[in-house]
Amino acid sequence: MAKYLLLKHYRRSSGPAPLPGTDLPMDRWTEQEVSDHLRFMDDFAEQLRERGEFVDGQALSPEGTFVRHGGEGRPPVTDGPFAEIKDLIAGWMIIDVENQERAYEAAAELSAAPGPGGEPICEWLEVRPFLTHVPETDA
Image 1 (tube, rainbow, N blue to C red):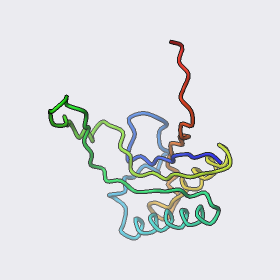
Image 2: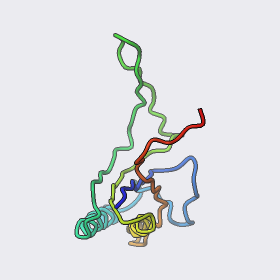
Image 3: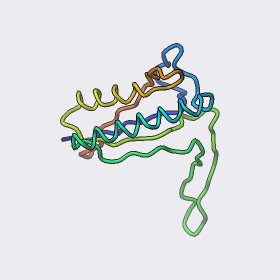
């Protein structure tokens, strides 16, 4: 088994473009469309639990702030948010599956979550394996 992170994005400044007609922001969906979308996500997570593949998942707020170490004895340095240009993470799900092909299959299933008019939104999901070893360097 291998763990993968499935990332949902609010919008992207890089990566593949959305399919035509599938990029209507959620804040313009009806209340019922949002409810149906969230129910799909819950049902999908339950299916993964039944298969023993679900590890964790959570939706995230679009707000965020960059924070870094400000120096010994100094407060944290903050900056942002940069919502108009940065790549926002809408949510994530961690799965533990047999191989990469199964991770892609699960991401494709999740991508079919309903959106406006009940149609699959076919959103792009980022699939990232967890680092299981320290990368080698040339140094």
